[in-house]
Length: 120
Image (cartoon, rainbow, N blue to C red; front, side):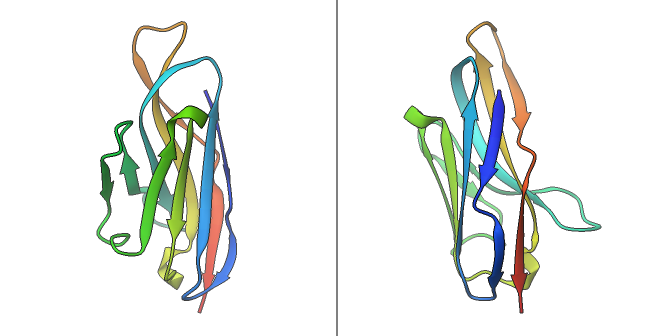
C-alpha cells in the first residue's frame, strides 16, 4: 500500500490548510485512517483518526479546529486544519490500517509526510 500526502505548506497563524492522502495498491479494505504529526525534537503524535464507518477521534490540541474525513471509494483521507497556530508546525504523516487483496490480515502503512509550517 502506498500513501501519498499532499497539501502541506507555509501559512500564517490563523490560516487554514487542507491535507489529502491517497492510498493505492492491491487494497481489499481499509479499516482505520489517521493523521499523525511530528515536530522537531518531539515524538510522533496522533492528530485525528477515522474508522471506515466515519467514527472520528481527535487529539485535544486538534478538537474544534481540525476535521478529518475520508472518501472510502477513493481510499483517501483528508484533514481540514483551521485556526492554525505556530505550535501546529510539524511533518504530518498519513496512516492506514489495510488488508491487501492477497492477504488475510490487516497491516499498518505510513506515508512519507508533508511539512506544515505556521508562521507567527
